[in-house]
Amino acid sequence: MNNKQTIRKEFQNIRENLSIDRKLQAQTLALQIINLNYQNILSFASFGSEINLWPLNEQLAKQKRLFLPKVENESLQIFQVLDIKNDLQASTLGILEPKPICRLIDPKDLSCILVPGLAFDKDQHRLGYGKGFYDNFLKTINCHTIGVGYTEQLTDKLPTYQNDVKLKELLLF
Image 1 (cartoon, helix red, strand yellow):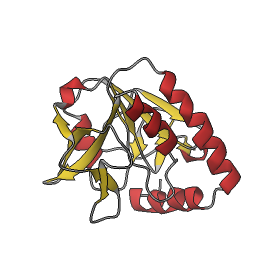
Image 2 (image 1 turned 135 degrees about the vertical axis):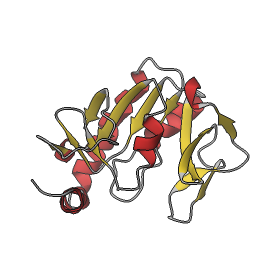
Image 3 (image 1 turned 60 degrees about the vertical axis):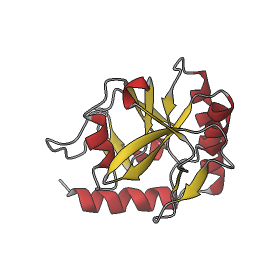
Image 4 (image 1 turned 30 degrees about the vertical axis):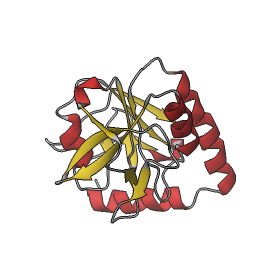
């Protein structure tokens, strides 16, 4: 089996080579997430070739159900975002994160977490970017976790290690 770094490169390439039409189709289908019956949803700030969740995030913010992570001291902190246009700023990596004016919340108040990844497998494992932020965070949380991405990111089996956290569901569009 390929090592994680090789798989990361392979699936990064797959995502980057999706057509604009395919990406728009997935973005539109991802709006279905709005119908999930969860109050406090931790989403993610789509970055690079990740599935575009900004239309979904805008709707969740209007409903006061949007929460986004921010990396602080090598861990994820969770903030409520009410206004996509004014509550976010670029991190040092260029990823949009909540500004300090946003309300920090206790992760135990989350009811659902939408988790990004480079690849997912049929056993609900995910392969992230290798920093461990999400796996470390998910180990401390007891709520519904959903891997979100493109159907092209699904593979039969990913290599897993002790620190990897299995998701409860996948929604691939």
